[in-house]
Image 1 (cartoon, rainbow, N blue to C red):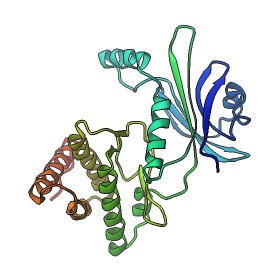
Image 2 (image 1 turned 180 degrees about the horizontal axis):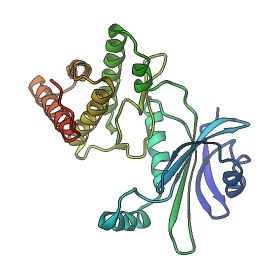
Image 3 (image 1 turned 180 degrees about the vertical axis):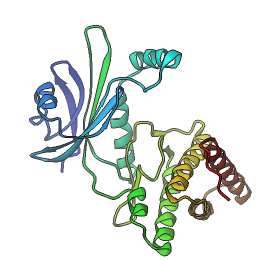
Length: 269
C-alpha cells in the first residue's frame, strides 16, 4: 500500500494525489461527470458522493463555498472563501498528520482546487471508504448498558489521547467518531480539525461540549454524557494537569452543554 503523494495537475485542477491513483483520475472533470455515485450530502455549498471504483469505494467531497449562510455573513464568508488557501489541501494535510500520529481517519487520495476564469475556487477531496461504525450508529443499535459504558469509556480515553497529541476535532460528535476493532479512534469529517497549541484548551472544551450536545440528543439523557466526562477525567489523571483544573474544565463543559440544550428547548435533569 503506497503512502507516497505526488503533485497533481489535470486540466484546471491542481493539488496532490496518492501514488497509484493517477490513472483513475487522469481526466478529473470527465470522471466527475461520469461518476455521480450515491449522494450522501447535497447543499449549495458542498456535496459528498460515495463512488465505486476498480480500486475500491471512495468518498468524493466537492466544496463550492464556505457555508450556507445568508446576508452580510454570506458576503463575509464568500470573501474568505475566495482569499483563503484550499480547504481540500488543508483536509489532506490534517488527515495525514492524524495518520502519522497513530490515529485513524479515511486515507486521502486526492486533494485539488480549480478556479473559474473569474477566480472563484472549487475544492475537491477524495478519500478511501472506512467501514468502522460510528459511535452514533452503535448507540442507535440499542446495545445494553454495559456495552454503552464500555463504548463511551474507550471513546473518552481515546479522545483524551487525541487532545494530548495536540489535535482538536472541529465537529466532534458521535456521528464523526468511531472505534475500530482494537478500540482505536477513527475520525471522520476532518474539515475543521486542527493541531495547534494556540487556544487549544478552549477548543477542547468546546469540542467536548459539542460531543455532549449530540450524545444527549441521541440518548435523550444526560447520564451517558456524565459517565463519558467521568471517564475523560480518569484518562486525564495521568496528564500534567491538577485534578482541580480538570474538574473545573469538565464542569464548564457540562454547563456549556446544558446551555446549548436549553437553546434548543431541551431541559433534562
